[in-house]
Image (cartoon, chains in turn yellow, green):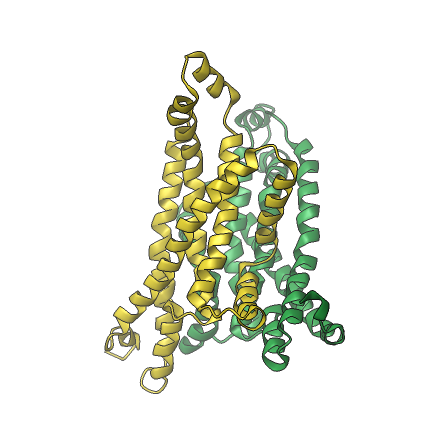
Length: 225
Length: 223
């Protein structure tokens, strides 16, 4: 059989290294989603309060992430922290910082949307049944709000995992970077490596993101009513 | 910090940023146009559940939506030449952005078509419209109006995604900023111009689209 070049994926520890690189990507997304969710819940609650200046400020914060691409924010933090502020931070930390702040903005919007879309009669019926304030939140409002938030939050997680592929551009050693190293090493022995390596990374991302989108869609359909 | 900006440097760098913005607009224009055409064709095929092709389109949508643009671009630009398909940077960027955008536009149009109410379709059929007439005069115009907000969101999304094409050696805004920082250490100025450039590109569009969204609400019927 003719040599197709796909062997490059399994040579030495290449396969494990690529998976390890994917893990770095997933780790950055995971930590950012956790931090972003905690901050985002606070922000979402703050946005439902009727404090005009605070609302305007948080809205501006959200729009900053919606209008300026995430890669620009990565560059801003990456290039400005060390020279301008004399703070030395790694590419990973930069990424987690930017993705957490972005996550907080988006989760905040999801939480606000869920809380504001709750029909008023839910609260009133609960109160009419004689539920206390605490019971009202515990049994009526929070469970319903969570149902409205989960599909959006999973969607955001998928988007974030895809977007973490950008961290290679600020020097983080993750799956794409390891792929590049494998390609460079194999320049003579495996000239078609870039086809297989990038193709494989493409499949890796798909294997992670596809199940998440499916779950999000299923949850959305099941919890629609 | 703000007081110490080198305004002369900023003035001198403006043409570089201007060129890069022009490149971004050009790439975005073609990518959005092709994505819209692809989306329109695919969504009609999906709506009428054409056997065989529908499955292929579904598979394409899942592949496109669940993989990052950066990896798509690297595969197109570095991977495909190894099997004999070589494209220029600009072509790669437009093909990559269209591969990504096509699925988003398909979903937007399809969402619109499915949201056209059943009574509209049934009324059309009962007054004797043919299937093509139904599509042309009843479904598509309303579907288009319903889709405007998500189409608009996709346009902004694609415009922002062009920030990634610097990764395949195109002299876009990201690379202009990076080069200026590398060569002159004018970090604050270069980053300020970078953020300003994206504000100029995206902000007006975002304002126009939210206005348009309110306008087209009037085009919906049958609720």
